[in-house]
Length: 106
Image (tube, one colour):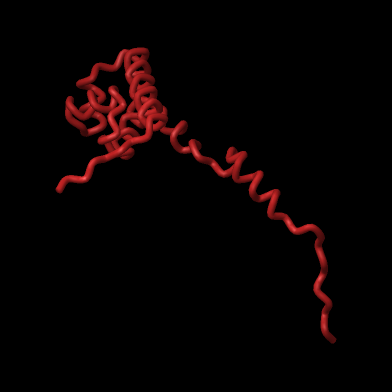
């Protein structure tokens, strides 16, 4: 029996936007699909799926396409801990109420 993949709607929307943005970036850079495919080491079908934002494409392929177009820094800093506002809130909530020094036994 084949498992069905259920992709949440926000994830699908995000991937479609990512694919569309990558397509626009490729066109703005005057890069042909064939050139991006060759440099990324992927097939035409795979690049088409990337530009459509398909969830079946691995993140590694998306990363290779971004690298070819000079956008890899955007992925590198995507989930940087310094930009994690929710994580900072949770950390701040769990801070101790007071700080005590340990007594040194002599």
